[in-house]
Length: 313
Ligand code: PMP
Image (cartoon, rainbow, N blue to C red; front, side, top):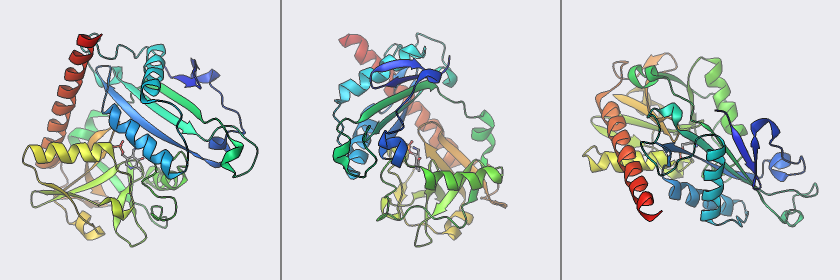
């Protein structure tokens, strides 16, 4: 199984998927995207991803002339072409994360003359990439990972290109991640223009201190992560207090536990930042419990939605 790509309704394997160089997504990075995953073939929190895609597009003045259903059907068709279909048929195939789908939806300004005038591009492009969900090594969850502080580059100022926009223009994120890769770390933690912690290059940051889970507020300049919100909901529902609070370096380095969240990786414990251990340098009990509760709830919702779709189909 490899990647299949849907470019404006035409599905091909990845090698044959092409987009014109005059697409302003290519020329200017003018576009927005989402990544969702499946559990047992069922798209997870798909409605939230659709809503965020539209919110991102609105922030760059980009119309999305496709209905939610249209985007969903194109996604399912692309997953099916990639051998990752069977949405709604939980239990139909062997369980295991690698059998699930990674689906990236991109909407760009479309093709037009070389000008910033949006009127030059009457038709947005819709591209959907479906491939097997990359497997995060079990050791990352069991032993935790190292991250680094991103130095010399700050997260985009909220009044520049707001990090709330899930934009195809990912240069700021890529620069942060380059530092992590160079240091042999799995993530880079950005500070914002005020020197507060904001988020990681491709995930949201959390700390745990005295039994309370904290993550920077949106106002600190970060993506409103869907996993971030889901994690807080799950935590609060099971009695783990989760809240937003401005955080500084000292909060992270002095925390009992830390972790990051993203759609594809769920909740990953952080046990080292630069060369310093967080807490006792091992995966903390609250992080471990949150991960277990997160997965339980994800499985429960996916089973529920597959039973519902089996009943209505
Ligand atoms: N922040 C950034 C910068 C990201 O790229 C991502 C991954 N899309 C996240 C946070 C996590 O967001 P989500 O939980 O919605 O995947």
